[in-house]
Amino acid sequence: MGIGIDIGGTAIKGGIVDHLGVIQEERLVITQSQLGYDQVLNDLVLLIKELQQLSPKEATVGIGIPGILSADGATVVSCPNLNWQNRAVKQDLERALSLKVLLVNDATAACIAEAAFGSTRGRSSSVMLTLGTGVGGGVIINDRVISGAHGVASEVGHMIMEENFYDCNCGKNGCLETFASATALIRYCQKRIAEGVGTDLKANENFDARRIFEAAKAEDSLALAAVNRLARYLGWAIANISDLIDPEIFTIGGGLSSAGDFLLEKIKAETVSRLTYPAFAMPEIVLATFKNEAGMIGAANLGRFI
Amino acid sequence: MGIGIDIGGTAIKGGIVDHLGVIQEERLVITQSQLGYDQVLNDLVLLIKELQQLSPKEATVGIGIPGILSADGATVVSCPNLNWQNRAVKQDLERALSLKVLLVNDATAACIAEAAFGSTRGRSSSVMLTLGTGVGGGVIINDRVISGAHGVASEVGHMIMEENFYDCNCGKNGCLETFASATALIRYCQKRIAEGVGTDLKANENFDARRIFEAAKAEDSLALAAVNRLARYLGWAIANISDLIDPEIFTIGGGLSSAGDFLLEKIKAETVSRLTYPAFAMPEIVLATFKNEAGMIGAANLGRFI
Image (tube, rainbow over the protein chains, first blue to last red):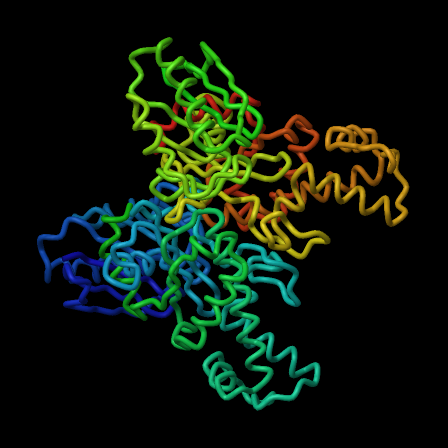
């Protein structure tokens, strides 16, 4: 059993996760980041104490955070969603709790959930790509999470691919997430529609990534071009990552992964064409097992992968 | 003390390396790859036995090979320089020797030499980029060499950057080594000269990378453009590698590293401008310590980094 917390911009979710990766108890509080750091911290302490009462033997709590941690995992360097900067979260929580606190980036927590109980279970090296509003990632080598010398490893979404028509939120141009996220899909379609390209996607109506995938499956030429473009950059990134660390398996998670095999097969084909040794060093590429619970499940199992 | 062997296309070098990384004894035989695998293996056995007599307590020999190894490090999957394919080198050598045999890619051996005694000593995570005829690499994380699930990690030179005007030897287009090797420098200058660009580099005379760096330092505009181009792609690759695994330090080796700080400062500037978190996550970037002996020194210390 383990206690895992997933801090999001709208809610803080906490769960007691059993040895099979099943959430036995779940609690939720609204993230009141507008009331400041102390309020969120206080809500977090109450949530954890409640879970602790349900599972009194726990000695550790793992917490997934949507931001950048220091290399020692003790400080939240930057977390725009919560408006936190350089907060000593581990120390502040351990003062208020009788538990050891482990912090981890939320994309890395999802990667751990897959490695512990999901699509990459039993593999000692894996890379997760989380395709949502942005592109997040997690890297596990020799059964250990790679957090990096400065705490900023697995920022896969910010690898620069080539020039793009809009800048990334991070301030750079050409980041993978501007080619391979839900935002990237939508912006590409909007741009092409503005240029006069015909499509079943209605220009005046708000369309989301799900609608683009539906249209692509129905062979709308713009939607299909947008999905193929996304798959091309993902295959390119996967091939480059393989050249560097050659993981056994890649897993694709996040909202876009619900496009399923339609997307997966395209990504595989684009990867093969860019690998240096496709004949004997093709990594497995699969869809992630967990959806919204991944953060909690991974956080509860963090200790096994540090 | 340790025995390290560096197999090259022209010579096989063997050395006894002491605990400070100094080569105490060195022996060399010509690589007779034209006479076939058995001949090279026989020469290798004789060389190792000679070194073993000089240092009888050794239980292990490390061997750097200019090719691709299987994930278990036992088989040479491909080594074009020696014309070896799928050779069970570890088993064949251990049958003929009373030593345990460890095999490693030669660029990785150089990376280990730097980590054990050179520019990256004492750092638990480092990446080496070896800039020569091609671009080789080595990756160390948590004090362990990353060889990959299929044995093909650290093929940094084959990460695809963008389209280039000539194809890589590997068959792909856009590989880092077609932008950032001695070959890349020379071909870029030749192309620009053919296009009519003025330069102090003589088009009719064979110029090498050393000559291009000299001309760049003397502010020849073509040579300077060529060096700046090379630095730009290296900075780009270093930033992307940092986004993925965030190593503490990068070290630049190989023949081109003799260009020294002139090249190093350009690479640093190009890296900073592409990092996601330049303010707090800039890796150190330094020049490698060892030259031609790196392979032997690293091979002799392989056991510490596996």
